[in-house]
Amino acid sequence: MIVSRSVRTAVTAAAFLASSARSQTWTSCNPLSSTDCPADTALGMAINVDFTQGEVNSFVASGGTPTYGSDGVTFTVSKSGDAPQLNSVFYIMFGRVEVTMKCAPGNGIVSSLVLESDDLDEIDMEWLGADDSTVQTNYFGKGQTGAYDRGQFNPAANNQADFITYTIDWTADRVEWIVAGTVVRTLTYDDANGQYPQTPMQIKFGAWSGGDSSNAQGTIDWAHGPTDYSQGPFSMSVKSASITDYSTGKEYKYGDQSGSWQSIEAVDGEVGVNSGSAPTATATVESASATSLSPSVPAGGIGQGSTTTQTGWPWVATASSASNSIPSGWTMTPEGKIVPSSSTVSPTPSSSPALLSSASSSVPSAAAGGEVTLTTWDGRGFLTTMTVPVGWTTMVKSYDQQGFLITSTPTASVASATAAPPVAQAQADTYLKAKASSSSAAGPRQPRWLCSALMTVIPMMMLSLGLAL
Image 1: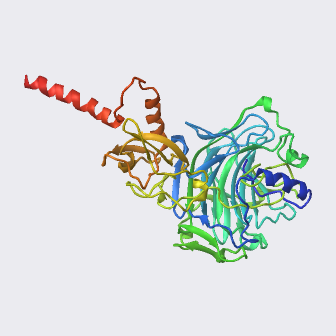
Image 2: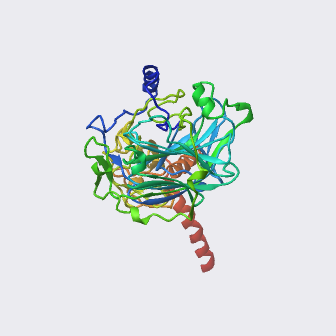
Image 3: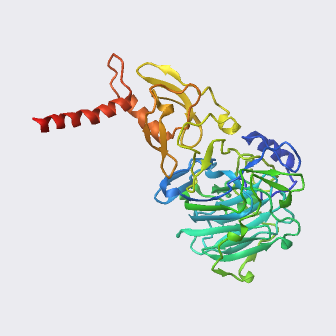
């Protein structure tokens, strides 16, 4: 589950921290209390992800398995513990996040879009399955929950029946929450009373069950639970996501422990340089249409993230660095796919611990039948071991808009002994399936790319002979 860092207090802190520590996948690191936190990978550009075309490796799944189809990516809650989500491997430093989505129905079910930073700044949009006419907007600075009086319910009609575009537009001066082109809420820096979100944000979205019986009664009541799973499954779908980073560069670093945006360093770039490029919303809803939350109502959030498992309300804040990053030698496409920065062989990345945590040697080893076994990267950026034809690692690679390999032309007869380029999982799967179904007859087998070439050349030769006769 994604963890919105909403609904936090010191009550029951000891018990909750013990539980959340066991659920952590990556080491927690809050830049306000440590000077050794790793830098955040910057998006530094604009991307437009069409999830109807399938998954992209700039977002990683957790808490369950999202599915892909004509509605885009779908997050389904069908039983207790289900909380599928996608998390960006990058951060934005001020920016615009537009998500076209259809919310999940059902009492106790929550659909969530969360922007959160390592030092616990947060901007949220959340939809309760018991109410298809509103969206809850919320924000937090440095994990300070106060009296839980920052949330509002704002209009979002027919959000379970229709695909609607929801937008969070965030600058150094203000945050706008936008529904279908209409601004439903604006927060200025001054209005935040020292709690304005202003540090690099990771993007997360998914569905979870706030009404699950394992949650505290406060969470169940807020989510209009309890959840009746016999009425499910309950699904939220995201058709597309357009994300613009208003800053540029490769990484974002905390220059000190103040947590101010002025202290953030954009490596090889500039903070907020593209803020003026934000589109203008079509209209603004008067503030009177927003309904403020009672301080006794929890401020929502997605139930579990890479650092914390939701055990109900109240929660206690923790922080962590990004779970993945963009390794050296790779780049982001405008479609949100992380691919090699050139079409030729690139050296094995050495600066991405998250991607290399289970790495073995990437040097190919010779195998019988003109094939080699190597360790490389699949289409999601994870290491995998596979058997490929000799010469694979020196073939010129070409990638489609989703970042998957579409052509490969041999340029050498032997594999490189020093580098293994990233190989798309789709291409690897096709090859391995063909290999597994091939004949097991004795004798050496020819490389499959050579067989394919012969199958093309031989008919052409026969046709030529026929014409000559």
